[in-house]
Length: 101
Image 1 (cartoon, rainbow, N blue to C red):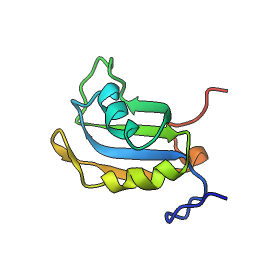
Image 2: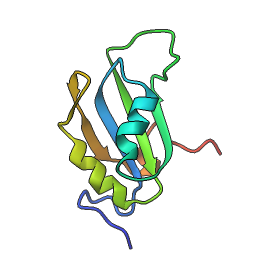
Image 3: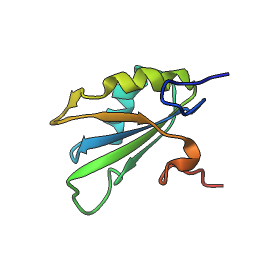
């Protein structure tokens, strides 16, 4: 029975906000991949978006829910030019992290 201090039992998804507009999905995969096996990563807007945005948001789904607690320790880590905000996210509640089925 997996559970986390966040009160979202067993979630394997984190939401990363306050990302620099310059960040790429490959950079996110490298940074967060050290913490556990990533099953899926979604960056919005995507790398190939035609417009520029002031910031980005990333959803990362780990294979093991225990990686979520570890990933939260990256909160306030400055990456490129901003302090990351990492929070657990229940899969059904992540507006942009829904399966394509």
